[in-house]
Length: 486
Image 1: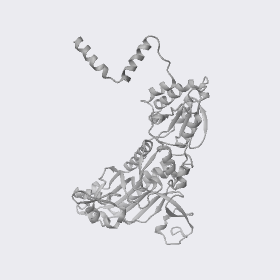
Image 2: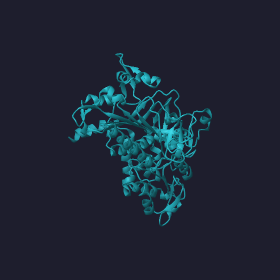
Image 3: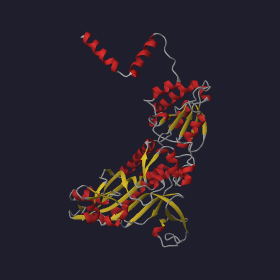
Image 4: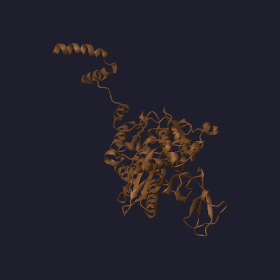
């Protein structure tokens, strides 16, 4: 057996990569008392499997190029687009389409979790419908022609026609109708999905604010009466208001046109911004607000309080709600058995949230010209720890920075996976601090000269307020204990 093993290793060892034998030689050196002295870089590399390191993040950014040349050429048409591309959050693919890079995906996943919490909090059930929608369904609702060139249309090898769904009223109503007649006890039914949507925009612009491919939350509700449907409508609107409040976004809910979706009632949730493409009229004396599309041209008096003056502003539409009545349920025969055990047509509503648009709109209104600022809950990482520059006078506290970054997640479970270490120690703290500011980490912790004192203190910068404080480890933990994550 030993002879067989010996011959086997003689055949295998020459085939092993040279790098695999290196640790073995190093161990021999250590055994002989010649162990090399570990460097700060070595210790950081050992952390890479436990802690996110800036040098390892796939975020191809060029933060020190403010994009003046591209802005002059008109490629960067708004602040959020410029900042997100410079920071390596998105990368253009083709007109109106973008790669969402890892930091953006982290942020979007957090937003999706928030949306799930609010939608499921009111009884919503999540599903996933095909993006490829049959032309037959859209012809039955007469929207195949009504939508015009906005639909991406295609044929399969058998000649059957389809579209890439920009919305799913037809599909979800057909799904419900295919299940047979429901009981009134099963209503209200609130079904929603968060998926990619497609719209053939004639002039895609403003980055993620107006693209041809985007993520949207669309909910479809089914009720037993008009009164119940209005109650559900109000419940969803309240959930939207809570969501935007949690994000720290000052949204205006305005009366809106039902457009090609149709229905009896509609509201838009608008984020005021000069880059917005919607014109809004807001009363200064009461709560009335509306999209100008719903008002008489030139009207300035408030139709609600009769006293206030309507002031025009611009907004970015980030949500839209519709009370549809029986527009789709009648066409597709989505029925239920009422309390008299007789079939009746369901009353419907549909409710949209632009997931990628919320993300970009928040950056648009909260950021400075040169630095991204996130809603706290959506920041890709909550904390960035900066060790000292390699070879500096306080290089010896590099290990303390690494330990701090690791232990924050252990001391505060809510921050697990939320702390990133900027291990690019070949750069000065000043340059890394500037990058951290531009990327918008809510908290930046600098491990510098004061960390070398008998009682280490860390420079803590709150990006949202601009405040800087020096805290002990316990003080830092107490501060970050208040950070809300999702």
